Image 1: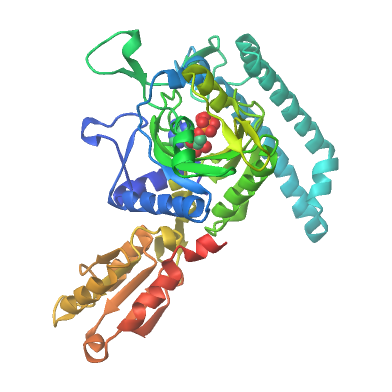
Image 2: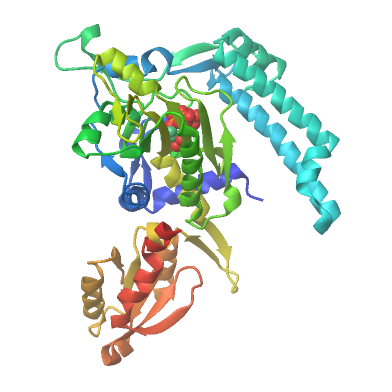
Length: 512
Ligand code: ATP
């Protein structure tokens, strides 16, 4: 059986072969944890962005967009807490010289215990079949309870160590759990140190502390500092939201696992400003809304789960992740955070400007509370790619690799192919594309046998392939082949826009 790592390797290979993702500056052997999106990757990324933007901005009367600069006044990051507290606890293995995030080592250990619980549950299901009551089993089975207690104790110790900045305790925890370096297998660890994740550079030609500026580590602060500009110019009434898609930069130490953790990445964030005291209601609303957005794509619903944070960030009073079953296991895909009035208050203090809202309904002026949804575009890209990548054995014993990308996100919506390169078939195919391309991204393909061409389109996730043959010249009909069922149907050319639109339009996703 293929391992999960093999699966990730296959996906990385496929992404490169077909022009989705390349290592950055590859001719110079690449730059670690930096990737470039190729011709198909750029399309898929744009479609994910469009789906997010439409669902968040266009579908909500009270949410508007923003496109703020990456560079911001350096005081921004003092106010937000990033200069002082945007740190990762790091630990080095003395034998392999590999550096790890201490909290990730412990979380991986917890994940192993969780996997044992899942194994127990699977055994129970096998033994008792339909009579098996999973919830009861989890609540009463002694093995499960013992393991769950272990997890709770580890989480408590970790939270305590991280929240109180007791790095020695964090090291002690790693030693007590007998965590070994995955590379060297040794338990010979250095002390745990804090490391700031922000990249800095200098503004203009002046060097020195005062001219030091940062590459933003999150897009959210661009929204906070513009909150009053948008509220006033857009006459926004609370509750309202500001959404933004843009690049963020973090000097990640443990940067690996392909585009999951990069040093330059893209975020899609929305800050929702609410009346103080109403944040929990909106926190629940956004948790549910975001999960629905994911589920509308039609992937396996068991690939998603909520995970409540055990260590709350310095700004939050509630926080949950939507975790996704990536090839390397369940990992954070998106965060939903109730950030209180922390950021706006900090900016009031550091800038000396009032950032209040006068609420006419209650005749009161206040600093709004904020609920944020924050998803990494690149992680979403990996989620789509990894769930879509399927290797099938067909009835004739041959193998086909198909990317079952949700049609609304697919790079190309339709490929149009003349059966042969002569008899006017290419011209007819191009005429069909000329009409379709106004609404859909189309690809023309005339090289190789039709079978090979179908496989190529399967491999890049094109939902439909249209074939132009000699009959087309007589009666203006074509065959249209469905990527997933591989079934073919003969239809009139004039029917194509309607058929394709019904499948690839974002309408269906947005209505869910
Ligand atoms: P992690 O714990 O995995 O480092 P985080 O909790 O620091 O993530 P947030 O600060 O909440 O992440 O950022 C919001 C989202 O941005 C994350 O859910 C993730 O999808 C994305 N993201 C964060 N860091 C990276 C990165 N280095 N590469 C790609 N995406 C990232």
